[in-house]
Amino acid sequence: MVHLLLVIIYLSFISLGLPDALLGGAWPTMCVQFDVPVSYAGAISIIVSAGTIISSLLNDRMTRSLGTGKITAISVGMTAVALFGFSVSSDYWMLLLWAIPLGLGAGSVDASLNNYVALHYASRHMSWLHCMWGVGASVGPYILGYALSGGGTWNMGYRYISIIQILLTAVLFLSLPLWKKRMSSGSGENGAQSRALSLKEIIAIPGAKEILVAFFCYCALEQTAGLWASTYLVRHVGMDEETAASLASLFFIGITVGRAASGFLTYKLSDVNMIRLGQGIILVGVIVMVLPLGELAAMTGLILVGLGCAPIYPCVIHATPVHFGAENSQALIGVQMASAYIGTLAMPPLFGLIANHITPALLPAYLAAIGVLMIVMCERLNKKPVHA
Image 1 (cartoon, helix red, strand yellow):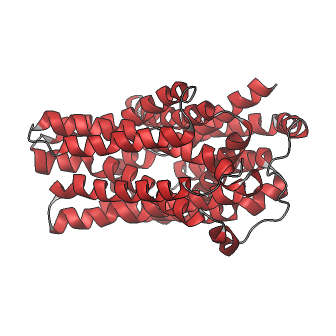
Image 2 (cartoon, helix red, strand yellow):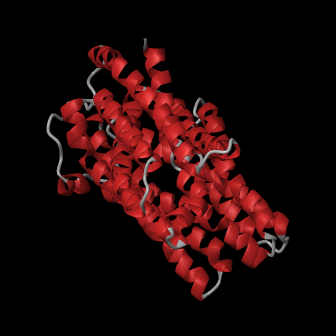
């Protein structure tokens, strides 16, 4: 039964990744259909991100009230309804409306499942869990492409994925007894803490500020590198656009493959050392990017940055109960998710301004500055007493 529940958790994270790359792939067709500027995709993205931030901040209270199983089932159901709503939208304003439940659902399932796995499973499962997200994010565009190649429209791509989410929602509701059995055989979902903590109380916990800044930096670095890699390769390195787009995708492949490998490395290395290993590889990758070796250095550097990113996110999450105690982990992970989404929302556009007004050649320096701050915050956290 325990293994069946773990399979369901993995499937949930695949479903979490499925919609993430859909908007980018479908938007060139969508913006023409809705007769709106290309830049209007940004408003949809902002609403989704705002929803994830809000639901992440509220996640501690909701999970204590309903439990991880129900929160996951309801959240996946919300994303299923939102994706179906996208598929039947006939006006741009409808997309903005359906973006609200899409963001709220994604944030809730992300925070709840991350905490549950951190409390109940070994570190390797956390790495593989986030590898499953990468699988979902990779499969989503292929489903969209299948819909388009079969003579369909972008709507059918969204509908196919909404159907997958609806089926998973049914599986999650049917699996609720498994979550109850797991909880009755363990020490409880959130440890001894019976009261939800306020944001002020969470930030006052020793080490909370450091981990929030570190998580902000990690997601800012990952998203900035992913978003601007192609532009860097074209405008600074001199690659043609088609080649640059293909090579930029290697960054995400590096993360997915790296997380699969990280699961095996956790047999030998602790979460703290896995994080340090990833940070070191990122810095090496940034240095390689600026070596005067042309396209080879830029390509190799980006792949190394992707590989370095791989263990950090899952290992930071998995180490949260150790650093802050099982009774505080749900609250901390929810706020960490919110901090991560803020980093995702704020820092890539900031580099866009730098690239536009100065030069995209500053991408390695930008990544290095964020990376160094992340390392400083993590090391400050490591010096504080642990709770387990």
